Image 1 (cartoon, one colour):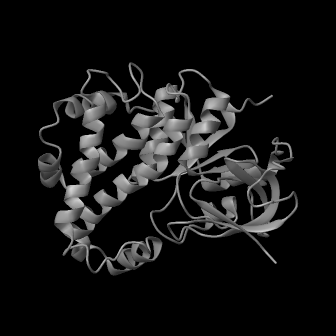
Image 2: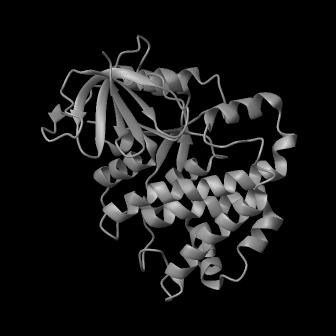
Length: 309
């Protein structure tokens, strides 16, 4: 029998800091995996075929089931390989940091835009402008000083956590809290090195942590073709049983047709019938005719579930 570990496939592209989150999780777990490289911008037909319409990455595929967002990727990797843990602080706090992590990312992205937007190809600019409706691309240059102040303020929070001499944000071992933070330091160093050096100066504990994280970031992976991954999803059987939280805040029930989409970006809408309703996630059977993922898992935090009339 194929074990869950053997069936792990990550869909992503390495330039994304959110991919780096997933790579950090695999690095902490020391868990080998197979990898499908996705394009940075549409068309992403293979990925849409897997998810039923969601274009964001990273996406985790295990057999016939698909896990959207780093929140659920972390939970699923912890389930299939509990040690070393991603949750040295217990889980709730590390997962709550996802919203802070998004704010840290946006401060870095706005700096990138203020420095290099004029050099972007028009098609790429239009795609990213569509993807991030909450960011006014026209004003990022005017507001550049504020964006830099926000990035440095986020970095100062990390330094304050590390100033007591701990090796990692949660203590002696790396975990999801570190994974939620490090990719945006990595992003800054690569995208605006000189500015990053200024904004990250004066934080010696953060610099030492950054070196430890960089040394950790090694993964063992095997690249495979998208067609092979899709065929695995089509041929496998889903294993997650139906489950409905009777105290659900929206009163959602099994079999209800819903649309699910992120509440902050335009990464796509997926329509399907509810299979699992829980406080932390919903799982649907996608309605898309060409959907290979037979069950698609979405986190509740950061995603909107809308019943279809």
